[in-house]
Image (cartoon, rainbow, N blue to C red):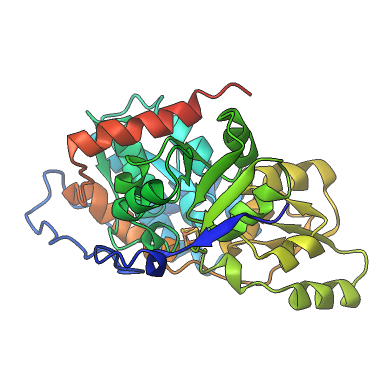
Length: 368
Ligand code: SF4
């Protein structure tokens, strides 16, 4: 059924709201690192030490680029051991990060769950800021670093904790579900979190005939087609997925009727309607592994197709290439600096973190 209502900051005149404001970058620590600065030369030793990693990405990284990446990769992997650190890499990170320095790769749900099992002292989040906050929420005693704190998200910046409080005043007693793509401040105000993998299950788990689901209006519209629960949505959108259009996908299909189209539910409804399959990044990857179709249009952030292509070189990905500018702030040199200088540390007010943890853990503990 269609969503029941759609609200945005203008409906509440909330002065605390600052849409799409990028997080200011913290002053960086320029003190000398407490570990020696690694050499970043391309040498036969670096070539030998990284040869097994190049095997993983050779389908998507040309040999001419590898000598520029390999010294950083070797240095980062050595520093991880030195710092007792683990790198969590989102599916939208570029292949040299995802496959060559990431210890755990996946979608937001997998990273959130893996963050609870981490034994290392330090977590380096290769993803955007709300993901690093989620890791800190679940690991309050660990040091959580993000290589560039300006890596934001148009969904996370579309809503504030104050917006959620105003929504609750407007709809007293209606439970609130927040997509994990929200700040700790917002997570602290809601009943439970969800990801695109489990959104329908989370909405139905609340036992209410109406649920507020925020901040992604397109994910809310998609969930509304899958459940009888009435959904009140927020006017947020992912700036990457909302750029895809149904016309664009119809053109791909007209050019090659055998092509399979798979889309993320953050896309607008006309895109989802054109798709042969709609699912979270994890579900999209499973679908590709199972179906191994010859040509696939993967309607999501561009790097994910590269990461899957590295694993399945025989599948041809047609890429309507939309990159997330926030994810692309994370680079090998910034990851190296992050581990060298132990920057930029993610901190959350402990009272907000405690409340936010309840919402995230309630989701993580949901039985399948
Ligand atoms: S792809 Fe969209 S939802 Fe994901 S981090 Fe970028 S802006 Fe946010």
